[in-house]
Length: 215
Image (cartoon, rainbow, N blue to C red; front, side):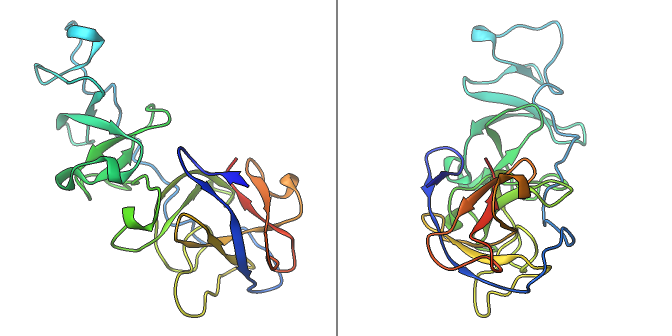
């Protein structure tokens, strides 16, 4: 078994092989982050609030909240979160914010460029039904899990008819998550860069016994 993010334990089963050769090409569909966002950029210098909470536009943020600049100079207090399901509907994206390790900030969907919304299951991603791990520039899965396109690209989803992945990746079902994700085939961790090679419980990944997943 492999742990993926907080609270959720998933087993990878039911691989559907695609082509026979593996490649690191293609789009990861969302590994970019909006570097303009920062939990510190909106905090007013020289001010103090109870409990060490940040001050945002002369207002002290509540506990478990951060002051976020959306990149356009607009500052607001945003509740911290782990998944989209932790956020209210009006601010339904648990957005990845650089410097806010292990958590996100509840923001309006589409508020920022390259916004990444942290997810736990497909229910957190109603527009695409795809909850898959972020990948680095080499298409190695690094996590966390975010809402991504269902377009058969590397570390995007392959939900639906056909389940064919591009570039030698294979379509793997994530039990407990609800998504089918295009994963890179592997035999051991050395094939996965910073990721881990997780053995399949049935089938093969383009002839290999495992698929690369985040550690």
